[in-house]
Length: 400
Ligand SMILES: *Cc1c(COP(=O)(O)O)cnc(C)c1O
Image 1 (spheres, protein in one colour):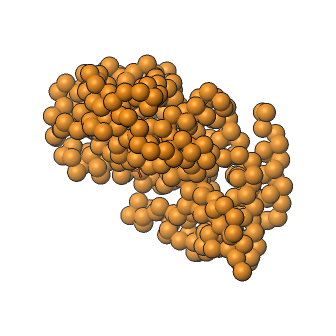
Image 2 (cartoon, protein in one colour):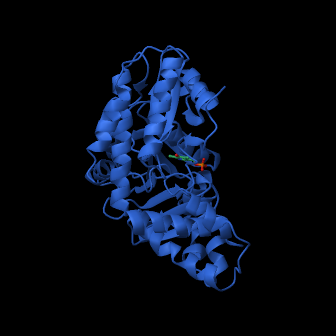
Image 3 (cartoon, protein in one colour):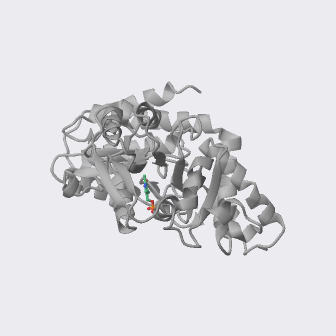
């Protein structure tokens, strides 16, 4: 008989585990959407989102998933035929590029392959060739949830500056916001997109776009934008409902209010970043002890790894077998490999992703590692011993 008769553990890179408190905050009848408690509390969400993004710029909400935020950011900045440069470091960078192509943009992808971060030197070299400034914007993900690479956003900004190029810098923080250090203003990011269901611990359904005054200038000449996606009325509303282009997403806002309280005012953002760092390193240490015959990190250099998700590669289909075992026997859901051989990935069955983002404490992280360890043993996949011990040691050395 399986041993999965407890609370299911979702260790996938989004949606992440929703805290009971967030669920409880949402568990109520529809509130008054014109005035009163919900409207007042929802208004506080916007300044808190700015704190989360570390920006004095504008922050708007769409009732959408991350793809909606992607599209909104592009629609407000560009016109058909505009040229943009997308840094490819995994499936999500390519995904944003494909969406841009579908909107009629002239998209060039600077591809860094499935297992490395974007190289700022290569970006600088490409921008220097663009002496007529045809490239309107450079787009990148911070964490690519497919490859689990973390791009060095400040270094990429410096590369743009060093090339004296006026391109807008647009960053996808859908997987990383609330998990990994991100400083929109200090790092010189013009547009940032995110979503509710990863580091922010709320169900999928809210897309966020943050933008600076410089990006707001681009909006003036953009002809791709339609009424719903226009960020202007959302950023400068005359009435509350204009923030949402219609009925506010009432229950998502109630949940988000709770999660922002937890993240910004109880734990503190810097502490949340440090927590994600410790848990990521605990997992990597366990993986190192298991050894490459069992699983190896897709991103070799730890400095280039996400703290929110880790992509692991196995021999043959062991990753798929381990995932299935953890799910069926143990009640642990791991993320599928999001590979396509088109981008030079290993087959999906040789890949899994561990999400370690959002609402996570020691027993949850150790539970994931311990269940994987049991699965390796049960399936007879060769692996080194002592992984749990080693992970516990990393956690014990956290800066409490
Ligand atoms: C999840 C994710 C997306 C897509 O978000 P959806 O909510 O699934 O549309 C885009 N980019 C990154 C980096 C992501 O992690």
